[in-house]
Length: 410
Image: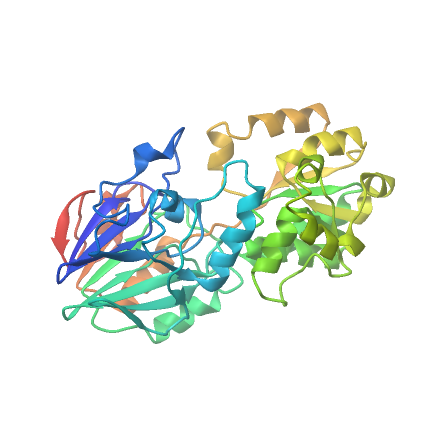
């Protein structure tokens, strides 16, 4: 079995790995780079058969539903099968109608079940559910010709499924020849903030805020939504989501996760979503009992917390909902540092709303990466999904570097 990292050997995001065995091929992830601008066509890796014309390309295995891992699937023929978690597939499809730029079409294929192997041509694939800021995320073990490659995907141990990491390390797959190991945090401070700590910090802020609390986080970061919901419960606030948020929560298929029809939840439909009401009419009807008006929010803003999106800005300002408000930024700081957030920052300053940063990384720190390497005991560790691959040798044994586009033996 041979492998080639088409993208990701020296950067975070845009991951794409090709495996080859007995004349058949399989891709792992097909992500859009984080810095991508304009037409995404320029970022599509040069791989034969993406148009469905080459039967040797058996399919694409998506580790988890983050754009930097699946964002180029729109350039893939529907003839090429796609594997991913069933809930992840539902979430991407549920989110697509709400995006200004529709999300990539995801073809039918294999739905993962953690620990359950399946065969694709000469490849045997075993997915392992992991703790990550994307819901329904997996590491992948791929076997062929007596060789075993383990793709870590993106993972952590500080989220609401953190126990999965310890259980995996206690009973890992054996005889791993190559470990493709994510290293997002290598060269950065060790992540120490857990999802429970995020919940408690938010609860403290909610309790001392007289007005509306706005929390900006990805609605697809289900762990974070649960943290916000639990903080609301502790402080007797009602959590408001929009139709997009309601659709994503419903798509999880997990009724233990907050749902928009719960009594502690409410649905506010911003103007832009109202303009899309025809194609969202069924969802609107299902949630009609929990819909809330702007006037209801402004009459008692301290009663609510809102899962914020920039489309809310005009409504909240015109509805005079911002007196005594607080704003929580709960995402990667890089978005703000590179200027993506300037419009929101100006809006907050104009309305005299203070920004609080409360966040937990979706990625393992060096300590947990070392635990994974120790548990798997691979013959070689291959850097991927890191801006500091040269530092792997400082912390891991048996590191083998490979550049983008380079084929190597597993």
